[in-house]
Image 1 (spheres, one colour):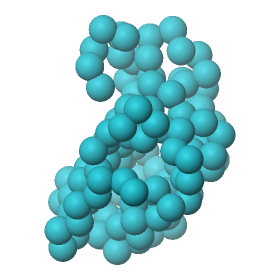
Image 2 (tube, rainbow, N blue to C red):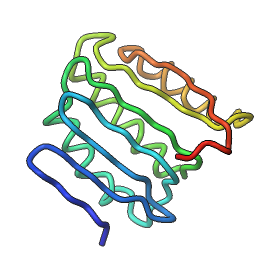
Image 3 (cartoon, rainbow, N blue to C red):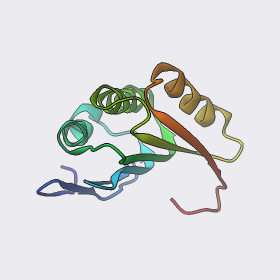
Length: 133
């Protein structure tokens, strides 16, 4: 269904018009970029949540650079971040939250996650629509 390659503890998922590009590598962390409105978000994100539970390490970083995500994805993002927060001492995982210039909703979403998950360190980055994802 989704083009997914899992090699030992590495996950690579190519972006589609409705799903983001995902790269998960131990020692580096998790990167999710693009648009996220999968038909079945639970199925799409299940291996990513499993990866976080099994391979996320202290000092890894989680990067979200989503130009758009739906409500179902919002709940999944929370679940991913909750796994990271529950797994490590406060501040050991850094979340890089990228939002498009002028996208107050995107920025606000990141701020809400930060408020709900105080055990994670958040860095906010604004990007212009001209930047490629």
